[in-house]
Length: 292
Image (tube, rainbow, N blue to C red):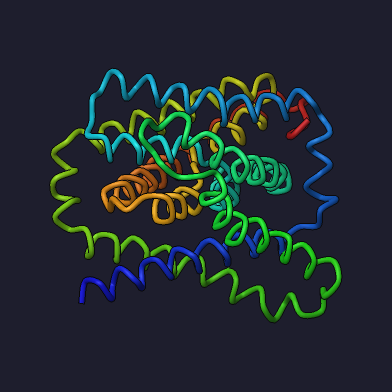
């Protein structure tokens, strides 16, 4: 029975990634998301925050908080995976510009797909897996569905209103199923993890990543909020695909899922706080234009 559930879990991870990425493509044209990327400083800060500073920060945290090897690998996969589709929901909660957060998402996704396969064999000692083995499932489950979504949006706009509800609901259902199945299949591992500083480490990782993005989003408040949330919300789809395709240790997947859960529990309240702070800011500075 457990083996059947493991198989369902692997299929569910693929479905979650495919539908999440396709839904992003269905919602925006390429022109809409490319426009905000024309500011080099913002692009450089986003890449620096997500692919240099966050992995370095997580690596340093793991030197301070020693964990079992499988747990450390899970955290490093989280650190290397940027561009989470759930950033859109966080942006809405924070009352920010969805097009700008989508632009950030579209920037981070392709870099993640190239970056993860190259870095995993380098920064995780003893990993005997080629970049191609890691890159192939990421391309198939994330990049290609994203491109398909863009193509449907561009050339088949009449069918979007019929298929969009499906692509909106499926990622939510599969994410819930992913969490439930992970807990069922790995129940004993999860019990062990809860007593091994993993949750505390996850909190430190998420809050630190948010701080990195928030600081690099300077100077305007909108950029700080979006980059803060976008840097803190790591890409569970990419991390879970890498965890299941490149590794056999189930504890790695458990750490990825638990860290993602911690991220959601922390970041949605943070998004609400950011919204209230921003509303007060613009009330106090009526001459300032939001998003400028």
